[in-house]
Image (cartoon, rainbow, N blue to C red; front, side, top):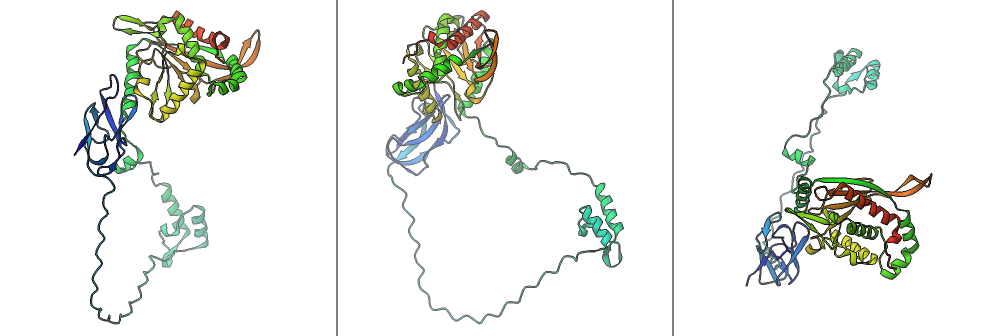
Length: 411
C-alpha cells in the first residue's frame, strides 16, 4: 500500500511554499510522524512529518520547487529497516599448484637523466652585479669564451628587463575559474518576500521619519535597583523592550492615527494594541507579534519576547504569531546602530527604531553632564499621520522612558 505525502495547510492566506530540503533520502526507512521534508513559506519554515511508517519510495518534488497546498510531495511504501546488505562475494576455488616461476633476470639499473645544462661561469664582477640585481645566471645570454658570462652580458640582461612590459592583473578565464570567484545562489522565499514587501512599502506609503533622543538614566537606574527581585519573582530578566512597548502603547492611545491603517479609501482605527517586535535571524528579519500588549504586564511582555527570540533562531515560530500587528518596534541598537530610518511594516502606519545607548555630554540644569543617551526614530505614513502627530507621539514615548514611574511596573 502506498501513502501520499502532501503539502499540509499552512495557515491563513498562505497558498504555496517552496521545498527547502528533504530530511530523508529515497529508499530510506521512516517512522510515523518523523520529519521528512522542510517547506519554506513567506514567513517560516515548516516540517512535514511522515503520515505513516514505511519506506520513502518516491520523491516527486525537488528542493527549490514551489508547490501549492495539497500538492503531492512524495510517496511512502510498505517496508522498513535498512536495505539488505549485498551478499558476500564467493571465495575463489583453489586451483592447481602453479608452476615454478622462471628465475627472473635482474632489471637493468635506470639511466640517470643528464643535467639540463651546467651552471654558467661568471666572472667575479659579473656575479656581484647579477646578485645585486637578482638576476638568475641561467637567464643571462653568455657571449664570452667557452660560455662564460661577462659583465657586459649581465648589464645587457638588466637593460632588457627594464624594458619588459609590466604584468597587469588578469582575472582567471573560463566559467570554472569565474565560479571560484563568485557564488550564485537563489534567494530564499523569505528573503524574496522581505524584498517585495519593503519595496512595496516604499512605493505605496508617503514615508517620513522624525527623530528625538531619550536619556536612559532613569530606566537604567530602575532596572539596576529591581532586576534581581524582578527576575526572582517572574523568572525572566527585566530588559529594555518591555519599557518601550509600554511607552509606545501610552503614545498610541493618545495618537490613534499611528495605530491605524489605510484600506482603500477608508481609515481603519485599531482599538487594540498588537505590538510587532522585529527579530533578526540567519534567514532574515521576522516580526512576531505580542497580542493585546496593553493587557500584559512587564513580565508577560519580557517572557513572550524572550520566547520569540529563542524560537525565531530555531525556525520554530508559528505562522499566526507573525501575522497582523498594529505597530512595530525595531531595535538596531543590538547591532551597534547609532541612527537609522526604519521602513514601515505595511500596512501599518508607524514603526519605532531603537538605537545604541551611548554616553554623551548633555546640558542638565545649566551644566554639562555625561548621560546614557539613545536616538529614537519614528517612521510614519504621512498620508495618514501628520507631522504634528508624529512629533507628539515621539515626545510622549520620550517622556515615558525618562519618567518610567508614569508606567506601572508590576513587582
